[in-house]
Image (cartoon, rainbow, N blue to C red; front, side):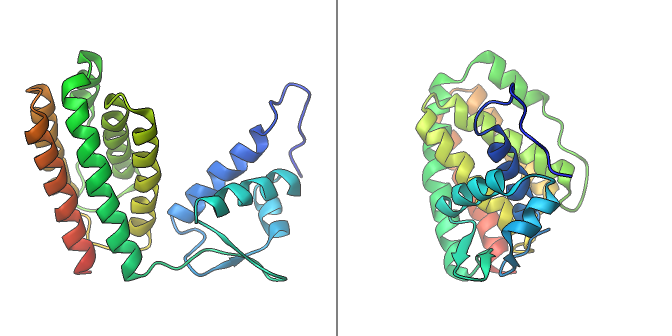
Length: 213
């Protein structure tokens, strides 16, 4: 049964919901790289009419996460080595700049939020650990005080998650947690140079594991 918009539903709300659900399906490879999807099938999957799903697909196309194939539907672009290189290059630039700026601007409240985050004790990547890591990087991005930069960090981290769930790399949660702790220590010390160095090293370590997988 399709969800119908009621008078209290803000314009675009169903499209936003469809985009969010589809994005998670793509990131977690429930819809896999290279797979073709149809508008009608997606509408049934999300129990919505075609209109918000079509709008969601347009948004995802703009982000490069789906591509329209005439008369066939939409394809989830496959991931290649060039994608891996580009994504981690952007991460170093964006998150290095964000954490350096955050060192001089981060509030005590955000520092306490970072310190209070509990990393799941797991030797392998899980949904719970993924949520922890995403929260960690998002807090720092917004603590930079530069919201355009923060949005770019969050968008790029979406690509990182997609690589992860596609099986690219060998995530080591315990090592990642230790590296996060070093980043927080540098932020607590308000040392922008050290924070940037720790963040870039953290991203490069993840990148090396992705390139060797």
